[in-house]
Length: 563
Image (tube, rainbow, N blue to C red; front, side, top):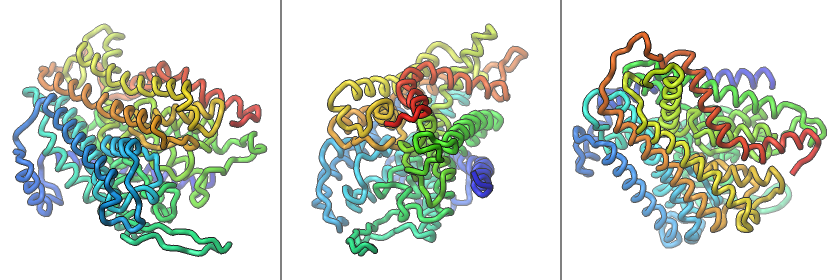
């Protein structure tokens, strides 16, 4: 790694840490209904939405009503996006004359975007019209991200609540997350990206003649607006097929840095928001520290693996699959960030990484997407592990486990275990089906452990609501479109429903005063315990599968075996 690349990495982390309390404090004011610098301009629009929706800001919901609203809103969005794809050929804003989307692919794509996964089995510029991209995908980029933020705010209220069992109002939280957080940030980022050369138009593809005399079609479209929210909302769906490796999506080093920062910006800031809302900023910083340590360690392993001479390519450092405009470091940093944050966008091919680096990217996902994770989703996923850590620590010291002064009992632990097991079971079960059936094996591009990783990564990306692809696997088949789509639903609501149930249970509990026997959950020791529980759970669940894929492939690569 060169000195300049090291400075870029330090700059990235410095900006992330500096922005966390600034944006986190702002979001805390938004969800507490306090005045912000944007209140004067946006409050009329906010109340107009409430009037149209028939919502009262003081009409709160219990966990069942809140979960029901989340599910109903998601299903309505799914139905709209599914039908929109099926009839896009007859609709306007389709200058390329693209036809209707095949039903299995339409199901997968609609599921992907409403669950904040943004897995893509298609090439954006050759499959979806500008209308579908704009009022279908871009809208879901906003509202699916806002849904994740709303859920974690509701969970926070439940954990910190002192009266009753109410968690707030989903529709109010949804509007505020979209209007005050996602929309202003996306507008600002989109304008900067346009200044860097990211395309934003409604033009048809333009024919260009290359130096070799061949004709190439250069795509246009409203890319900058969708790229801004795809990064800020940890959506990750590429407007163009090669995603953030495309110069029309990511043209300069500055656009690369800003998009990288945007991927982790809101997930990181929400930890500070959490600390403010529960009345202890130390609690928020504790969770942030655990996330940051896991991310830095994983990134370090990936960089070490990629800068170690590769015997498969004659003892050289492998550049294949990297984004050469930005270098190995920026390619690997993006790969680490996109898999840690359930973003899914890529500026290089993860399949081309060394087995160790690709294995860390896969590990980031299967741990539950809690190393920052998706907007909202990463934090409420991490809170599940916080409760498990508190429970195990309580067992070790021989007293009832407590978190934020409330007892953690059997009901909450059962729900936490369910939230961990459901996505994990989907990944392992569907991978087993994929590697033992002709329909699954026929889509892989590689044999051996690399082919196994291709299949496992696809289902992990779906169930983890990540959306990135290992590459090499042809996932645009009825088999993969259907099973990955199902895994996305499990990964989304197999966590949201249990975690809201936990919040509802915790909301009505009395707060016990601290004593000398209270185990502190805002200390460096707790950070280490939390990381240990995350790694132990991940290792016990996925180590056998990882051993069949990237681990054995790494050992074979040392003996100059490639697949």
